[in-house]
Image (cartoon, rainbow, N blue to C red; front, side, top):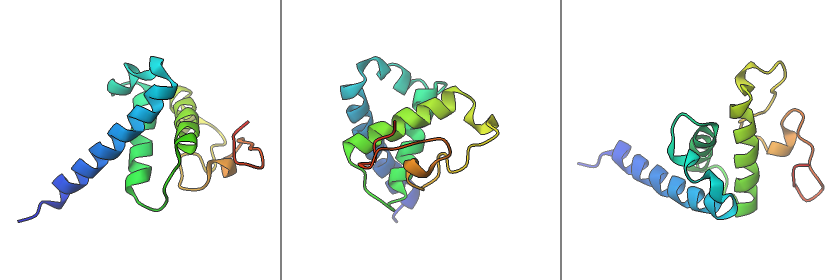
Length: 109
């Protein structure tokens, strides 16, 4: 008897662990906040984990870090209350999120 929810949780935990390693390697000060479920950093990590687990797209480390930074900004500044948050935390490319400008190579500016 295969429990699909356990399998999904294991996959999600693996994705989250790998993503956390990428974030901490670049932002060492985030290590503690990423383990505290009450922080914007943890919320950003959880969102990225869910996004990756949906399996629609694979992400390179640089894009994961950019998504983490933008999602942390969103969660730490009550993004759900913003008057204009079109596209934010959607599966759309982050360069299409309202107010985010990117260089031709896809780096948020």
